[in-house]
Length: 344
Ligand SMILES: *Cc1c(COP(=O)(O)O)cnc(C)c1O
Image (cartoon, rainbow, N blue to C red; front, top):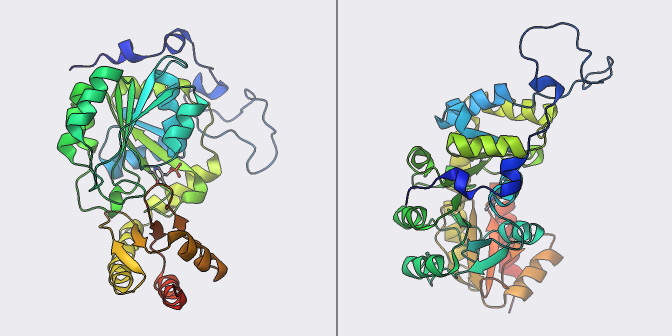
């Protein structure tokens, strides 16, 4: 179905006029800034660029996406929350989620008083697409989140299933590709040209090694991106964080060489884990983590903690499973040696 974005937008969002900050109204050259009640003293005394023009230009180059199809957020979390705040009316609209998946989709739904419809992934952690179509027809969700590669299962969703969702939902389909740099599967990014209801989320927190800077991105059609810009806090990305990420982007080969190292380590870790007696299964992963099933997940998790190693216990969402981030060679070796010490 061809989606009219304007028909999906919350009424109050359509009506509201965004805060116009001092720097929005000014563009050009000036040497005296007496407009924003900043201090004239200090190194961080000026407000950051609310449009993040420099950073946006660099992102546009690395992702090959025009600047007006890019939103830069305070982590992906801001973009996730904005999907609700722009499109979902509290107490009325619904979101469709495919658990087990990233927890923030549900947290943000609750924060925005949006009813959550859940359709569990199938045994191979794929979307049951005919089930999904049925649920969509019955429940009419305004928003659907798909995480691909999925956290915590590590697998990617089938692109044809996501296209089916895009063509079935009378609403937004947000595809979270936080781990796409680790995957051999293609990104859905090129599809934003064709599907105005597609929002693709990327982040600097994982492959780029910039989790502390809290910078995420949403890519979508111009209409949706201008709604994101209208709804965001004016100065949502600090100068410090903008320049930290710019430094990393402008260091040639840095991200690619880190990703290559992590993927090589992942392969080694996968083999070591699979050889351990307490490990029942290592699930295939397109990300920088491995989901493993062990005999006594809670006990193994706690034993690792006692040895000073923090992993993610996912026993409550995928039975018997622990999620392990790929670390450095040294860290992974400590993990393997510690797992060898745990006796059941
Ligand atoms: C880590 C992660 C993110 C990143 O979130 P930020 O707010 O950008 O740090 C997004 N989505 C998923 C599924 C993740 O696992």
